[in-house]
Image 1 (tube, rainbow, N blue to C red):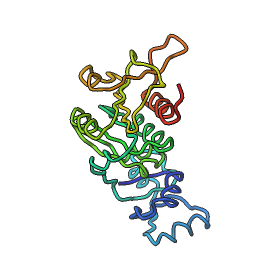
Image 2 (image 1 turned 30 degrees about the vertical axis):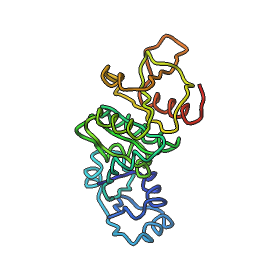
Image 3 (image 1 turned 135 degrees about the vertical axis):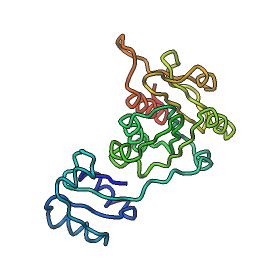
Image 4 (image 1 turned 60 degrees about the horizontal axis):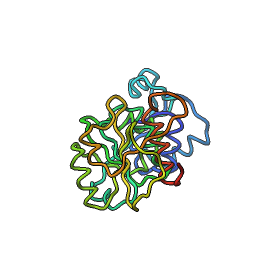
Length: 228
């Protein structure tokens, strides 16, 4: 898979160098940074701007591109051994997924389960997450009802989200799974019926709801830090 942009290249150099296959440069760079690239002992290839744009699919590569190993999902059984997981149910928008990976990684979620979608676009999600996805264990399971059954069997409290839910704080068991649905439909009645709690974020003004990426970050923070 191909990632691009100086920020994510710097992150991979610092924390995930073993994933690099090839380094591509589409501009002259300063000597110090070039020497850092050389120390990886990976091939460094020059590209013209047209080829770089094609590899980045029109994105803003800033002259820096990497070919890296594709991310391998973990086994679902390893997710079940964690304490706090995020379940993304039917969320396919790359922007929302990337934002949620970034927030989950930064705020301390242990792992992510992606369910209810057919096509998980790793490259786009990795880019939007600013590389946070590289450090976040995740798995992909199509049927969300299977996920909920397995998590309950493993001792998780299932925390759904809806406009009619209850506010935090609530008394939470040690193992928690926060379940978020897509912005258009949210969580279905069938899914909400499987939840142990349904949470909401009180709004100070008469407004429908927050973007799922923003709502997810707020709820993760409140669950981890115990704020209402």
